[in-house]
Image: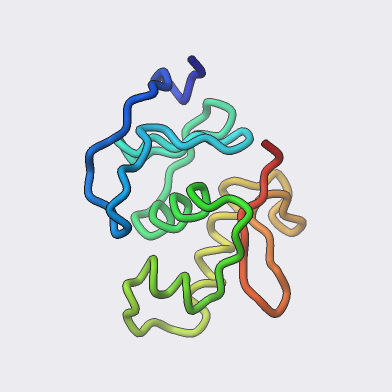
Length: 125
């Protein structure tokens, strides 16, 4: 079993309802990141990273779909449930996340911009 923060990973799955009706794993790991879906905590190299509620939803979406490109419209739909928000909202939240998870936020290694398309979370697994 691998550690995720102070908890151990288990093969059990959470029974919380999700929009896709698939159960979320208790722990989602990708590269140096581990997300505890039971406590809604993110860890990088076993160190906690504090997230706001929207950052939490956004990061969970990226971790569960590592490598997938999300357009701004898809992010609005998944994270803000289609609510009308300012056009720069996504860029602001991406910037906040990069400041929290990247060693060099101006040259992101994990949370990348795919020019003309959107954003993706990229890790070597």
